[in-house]
Length: 114
Length: 115
Image 1 (cartoon, rainbow over the protein chains, first blue to last red):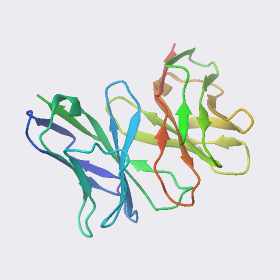
Image 2 (image 1 turned 90 degrees about the vertical axis):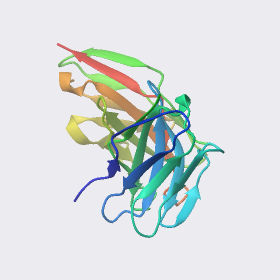
Image 3 (image 1 turned 90 degrees about the horizontal axis):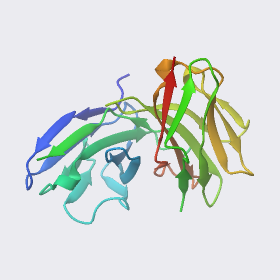
């Protein structure tokens, strides 16, 4: 049973470009969460999605960031017009939807904006 | 709003000695509490969780944690530390709302185990 998959593992973008980060949840999981980790900091929640629905986007910056989890295919975190401050590790986690159930994390995508 | 505090940025311990990594939490209702470990350039690995029941929870790699409701704490412990335990440890909480809502993480504690 494959774990949470994220790609790419490393992504370099120039200021002003777009970044697309992909996440495939564990088999059987339909709940996806995105977190951001700045250097030497903890994880900050960004968005929680179920298939075709955004459940909680309270941690998403108001501009340039968007997320989706289509009926088919991986979840996508999209960052438009990236700036240096977007450089971070972005982690995806998945769960089976039960509150008592832990979230399983992917290896992360390390975004570097030059 | 839910929150977690990890008061120590770093904990140093000699191999073979017991270790404790501290965590306190704040939630409006009953908490679900989790510990994760992160090795360099890796994702988070689940260690253990407290949902209900016995206050002493046992997890992976010999780790355990004690839930203390009166002190709102959930400290991570191990009787005998290994050099390979050196990593970044995160405590997380979820307020029980009946839904699989977000986790709120502490800032992390770096554990350094030396020979």
